[in-house]
Amino acid sequence: MSFVLAVNLRIKPGNVERFMAQALANGREARKEPGCRQFEVLVDPADRTKAMLFEIYDDEKAFEAHQQTPHFKKYVAEAVPLLESRERHRLQRALP
Image (tube, rainbow, N blue to C red; front, side, top):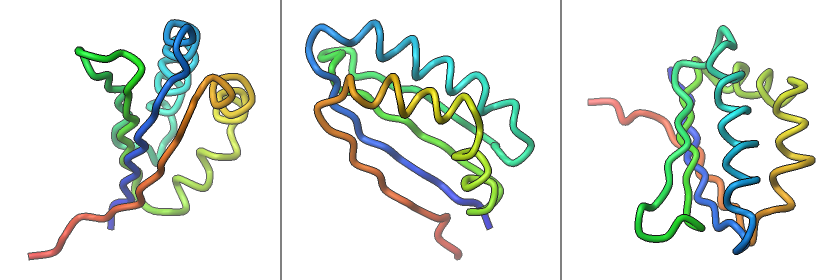
């Protein structure tokens, strides 16, 4: 069963470009991971300080593996401090 993560972000004003560069780099590398099915960096066109990460992994183990990668650790160290808030939602596909 797929593991889905939606992360609502609020970027500190003045840090949008730096944050987006880090988030996009993390996403590019994550999409190369065998258990990652989708990784999108989304932004509100009316307010670029509002963004969302939308990630789909094969399962929770694949997500846990993602968190151990050098690119994820770099993202946490360098990009997360540029945020005002980060709200993570773990989801799974509803079964019919």
